[in-house]
Amino acid sequence: VQDVIKIANRILHSFEEPFLLEGYELYVNASLGISIYPLDGNDAEDLMKKANVSMHWGKEKGGSTYKFYTAAMDKRASAELVLENDLFKAIEKNELYLCYQPQIDIFSKNMIGAEALVRWKHPKLGEIPPSKFIPLAERSGFIIRLGEWVLRKACEQLKRWHQNGFSGIKVAVNLSTLQFRQKNLVNMVMEILKETGLKPVHLEMEITESSAMQDPDFTIAILKKFTEMGIEIAIDDFGTGYSSLAYLKRFPLQKLKIDRSFIQDLNHKEESQAIVSAIIAMSRNLGLKVLAEGVETKQQFDYLKQQGCEQIQGYFFSPPLWAEKFEQIFLK
Ligand code: C2E
Ligand code: MG
Ligand code: MG
Image 1 (cartoon, helix red, strand yellow):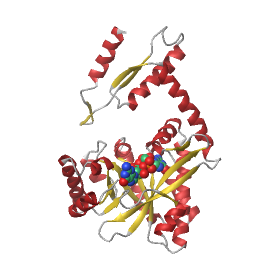
Image 2 (tube, protein in one colour; image 1 turned 60 degrees about the vertical axis):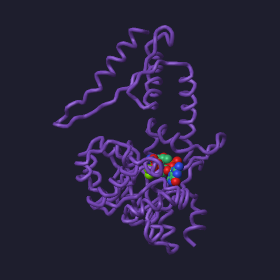
Image 3 (cartoon, rainbow, N blue to C red; image 1 turned 45 degrees about the vertical axis):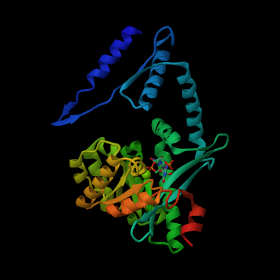
Image 4 (cartoon, rainbow, N blue to C red; image 1 turned 90 degrees about the vertical axis):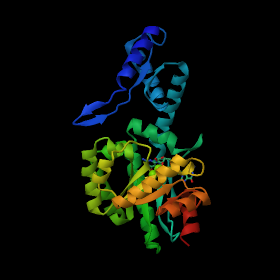
């Protein structure tokens, strides 16, 4: 075990230096999972499986670390496997539904749109938050089907709302990393828009910084197609990933969504204030819209308004609501 720790540390240490790739300095994280013969297993397959489980455990704890296999990990891994299997059937069994959270123009206080957020009501376990099942769906690839389902439902819903006279609002849909890389993404989106009759200008796609930065040239190509169709692109959770500002300028996108964590710290952390003001100023200079996520208090609202942030989303105005409730409150 002592030898293994030494090797693991040496490997991790070697990743502290950046890699030089076509003139860019690239930092890469490594996560190591370790299983030991014969303590953890008797054959290669079993040992590899357990090392893999421990690696994922390490990644979830933030990566850049090594983890030895423990039985507790396996217990959770099998619980996740059960959940993953249930998730496969959740669409057919009508256990998934969408909630909508309004997005507000900070100056007029008008609702300009809503973000669609997926929910899972598990028959035995009750409500399971997306933070728990989206990563599972990503890992298994099921996110491709799930994402398509979400997009179709959101477009159908918005089309109905438009037909009922609320034609001014847009819907924002989240795209996960794997979805973003799926081959027929652009066609799939086009098909759904055609099928539901929703105009592209009423659809916004949210992608995270990290998925946009994974392969910037690929990102530019896809975003260009969306933008040409009239679909708006927002970068979600902005400030938490590592985006190169040079690329930010090159990406065809329309909006930055400042991550909730900075908004939460606004009242007591000066550095968060500095970051938020800087993001707002930068958006303005780049000609991008800017939205603050997770606004909960009047104090935060006032600060954002004073800084010139254009849009907000958060409990201060409304939590995500299921469609009927959303209609009752906002579409009367
Ligand atoms: P996100 O896209 O950044 O969505 C915003 C999250 O912040 C939502 O969590 C929302 O409920 C929460 N939130 C909004 N306002 C406030 C506030 O004032 N205070 C606090 N504490 N939280 C607030 P939710 O619905 O649990 O979703 C979490 C994440 O799961 C989303 O983050 C998104 O990354 C992912 N997700 C949700 N639905 C989908 C989906 O349909 N597809 C994909 N790929 N990902 C999804
Ligand atoms: Mg989002
Ligand atoms: Mg976000």
